[in-house]
Image (cartoon, rainbow, N blue to C red; front, side, top):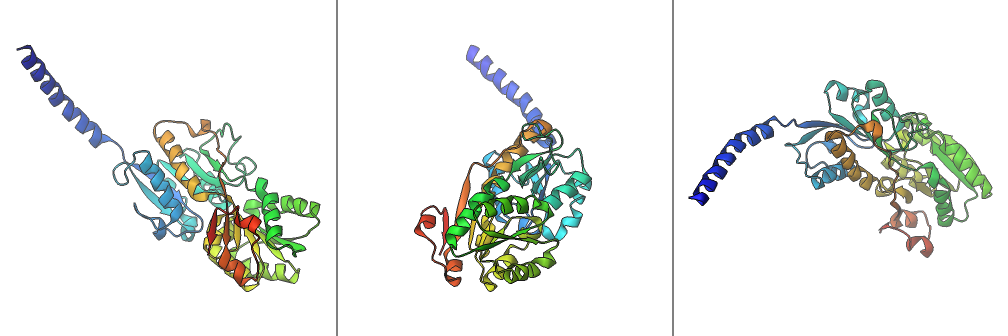
Length: 328
């Protein structure tokens, strides 16, 4: 009799609890997440299985944390062709926005909202650029990850010299989104005895002209960042470097995937996957103003052996043995 009473009591409790659980499930708000990527199109970033590798890694990170696309969240993607409409993400009342760390994108978002949390994926220098107060305490609606771009400038120049020891002049491409790159590279290069040439790209339409400037200056090597005007045209940049037969060191691997010679920098896909942890914390109530900016701990060296061969370069074994990825 006692067991029967316990059984009936448990059944009754479950019956009462089920409608409440069902109501909770039904009432759970589906989150709307804006996603902004430089170097991709909106079509490539759409849906639960996007073609864009960075967004795919972000969705992988969300899945690893238990989030289901279409049940717990959906994305509102904006690619390079729709940067002018980034502000629409505010009008769509997105719960938060995950965005490439390029200056133009973040500036647009900074102007558009002071309340919607913005998670930066690899901002070059978020403090100097004015998006956050400090790495430890951002102090506003921006948080996320930085790239440590400038800190790796010397290392990239050393690798470039190893790849092409004959180079005496190195041209540095840059734009206003990475304005500190030129003085940093100039100081590093001159200390090593190289002639440094500044090539400012104020607009993507100036990229071809930039290569002519470098060639006319006798540049034997190029240093090319993942800046807004350049990274959005990665394939064009890699093709022009090949056509002008000038070895180039890039900041991020997508340039190498597009045919570029070599890159050394943070694993950008890992950064996008890790961005999901910020989303998780904020959706659970964390204040972005209190979430510290993280810096990458994993860096990768990628070499395109086919590009090296077409340039007539022999990649030294000292570089090959350190490479995390070699494209044959």
